[in-house]
Length: 120
Image (cartoon, rainbow, N blue to C red; front, side):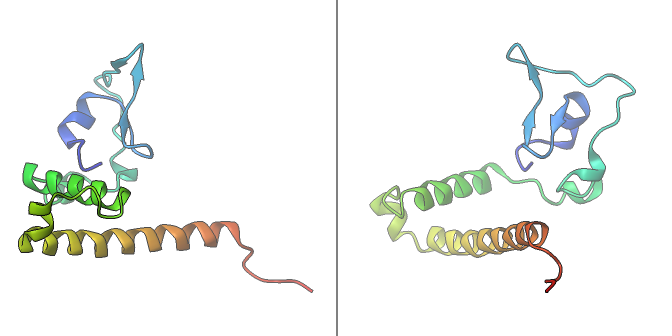
């Protein structure tokens, strides 16, 4: 949801589970004037908290570099990117955060899939 602003969410119908705009015939679906927004289920936690979570263009680019590097096991980084200590530091922070997020997601999936107690 980092790429979708609260203003866009108020204007367009958004599927927060897929983090995508709802489309019909390839066009975004406009939200009707009195149609409720999905603020309650938004990972940003509502408009007040969302304003602190907006990614700048530089942050978005750094996340894109991280995803490219991760997908290619580092082969997607240029020599200049590998040699940049600030970028490497930022990629490490993103990696730690990403892994913690994944770990939480995995725990939630396991908890939903496994029984609470064993019988027998």
